[in-house]
Image (cartoon, rainbow, N blue to C red):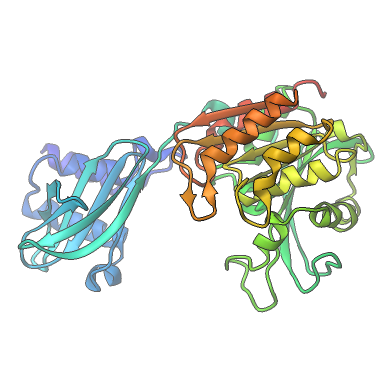
Length: 401
């Protein structure tokens, strides 16, 4: 009876935004705590097939699924299968669900942990891969809240660039509900923009803006979320071919692109006005987008006073590794800098990201910059920044209303 009750819960749709505690893998794990009877196994078979994809299962390349700190593997073979780490340590024996050989294993794994695995049958490896477990809990300011006015998200395409000719990109604009046409608003520009504006993505920037603006913990701010340039013929979902050139290059090209093309277009198209003083303007990004944001403020501190960046690429890609040294030999500029990095960030032929960000932190401190650098256990990406965004924005905008 307990297995049947858990199975019914597993079959019901999950609508929670923060689903790590109640998503399908957690429910599957609960169901599998006891051996399923034939009826339960048949129903589970269909759910697992949909989760992993029948074609992937039939081709022997299903991959692993991760939900919070719960990891699931599925595989099809008539012989018993098991999952082991790359070093040979057993993770678990798989549970068979049907006559076609479908098998599944669900396990809790340590957080902030990356490991290789393989699925073995009779001691022979059949499938191998890599799993990364990186889970964070979001606070209330990153969730939709009743009674909080929601800003609008507008979108347009830009393909007429003179600074970066032959490129096209999407731009998403967040306009807070509190904005009144004809008034001036603060501005915050985001690199890799569209995904950071996604209310269901790891950053949820628009949701955080809604909550903090409503509580008057940041000023009324228009967000301009700019995607990197695609080359002609690239689809919107493809990796932007011009991203590295635009973001990692030193110099003023990107900030000129913003000031002469994107921001005037936003003001004209959506009838908004930006406050002219640099203290009312911020710029943000992660990885190469982080160094891009820093470069924009470094080149034009008269336009951007505030920088928010995470897992910054201050390494030897197009000269970005020079910044820790340039900071020390250049007269201090009137910019405020927030950075976040993790001890699990990248280490490759271009450099060590945590070390580079430690050097940035030391140089900012040495030169007396208004700065804050937070550290956690994040890998390279935006997951580690998302839950910290409300606190970072409060710090960044603390003296502007």
